[in-house]
Amino acid sequence: MVWKTAILTASDKGSRGEREDTSAQVIRELVEEELGGEIIEYRIVPDEPDEIIAALIEMTDYFQADLVLTTGGTELAIRDVTPEATRRVIEREVPGMAEAMRYSVMQKNPAGMLFRGIVGIRGRTLIVNLPGTPKGVHENLAAIMDQLPEALLMVTGQFRL
Image (cartoon, rainbow, N blue to C red; front, side, top):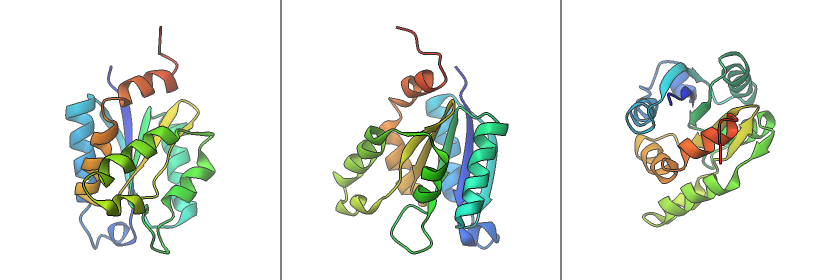
């Protein structure tokens, strides 16, 4: 199964072209190599709730991605609003996946508890918030990678017992 995947980076500096988006490159590599997915959309937006919301809605409803992976805006800084924007878009949360990411990272680094990312469903799309660093992306995505195919089968209505 080739999973249609969209990547959304929330970054003020990235949206202005002042920072290279290395976290999205890590996502791209993991999706293509580990998940067998295809990147169908990629976008960088500033850390503005309305822009994050609009991009998530377009990626889920217009591009009909099976999976949307966000990077950035998930820590404690005042401009980190990705989880709040995601909550306004999703219909249901998948707390176990977010908890698994936090737990896995906290085993190596207690600062993992500061990650506020969530996982949720909009229509037939799974949305996963990831940190804004390449290392954080890799560690968090690796924590759920083995369960992503089954979750995507369920969310997209293809799961069969």
